[in-house]
Image 1 (cartoon, rainbow, N blue to C red):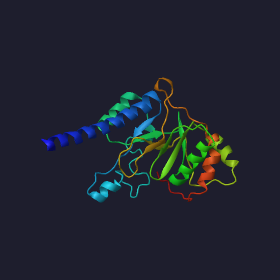
Image 2: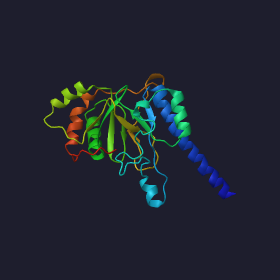
Image 3: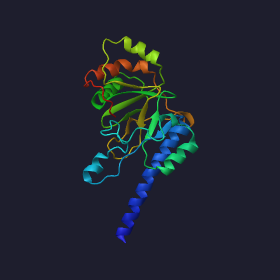
Image 4: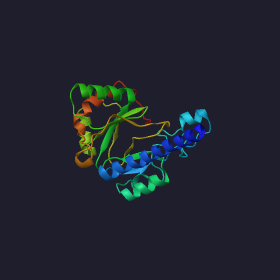
Length: 228
């Protein structure tokens, strides 16, 4: 009897985890009006090592964003339509949630160590921040949408801008929590606070964060490989 109950408990926890993805995707799309799309997901583990690494299910070798990028459907299919979101995550309940940036929300990101330093500095200076999410390799600071012209003017005022600082605006994407225990789990390090009637959280303009992100990014290795 203990074995049966134990198995039932495991199945129950698995269902709860799957429901969490759908509930989160619906909250982002329906209540916050953020456009989302399922990530490609992970290959099924073949052993202990594979279970820990969870390689990406896409055909690309050494994928820099394992599991947490769109494939089929692609990024252009991202939507805030609840019926489409429910259809996707009912059929793929373990799919990572990918946000299409540039519409209602954008982001800027740094390598994890530099991102943590930037977050501490901004909080110490009393800046009002929006949500901040972290993967094992990067911190994502969610901000109000910005144009390329606006971003260009802000960066032009800097003496030097590290290439480790990434900008996720129109046509970009970032993974959203929750994400399972795969190669790139995503978590909130500064949880979003929903607006009135579960509306979207407040987002700061990017110009209030650029100086701190650039300063912190100078401590991070440069590089042209995009990793989440």
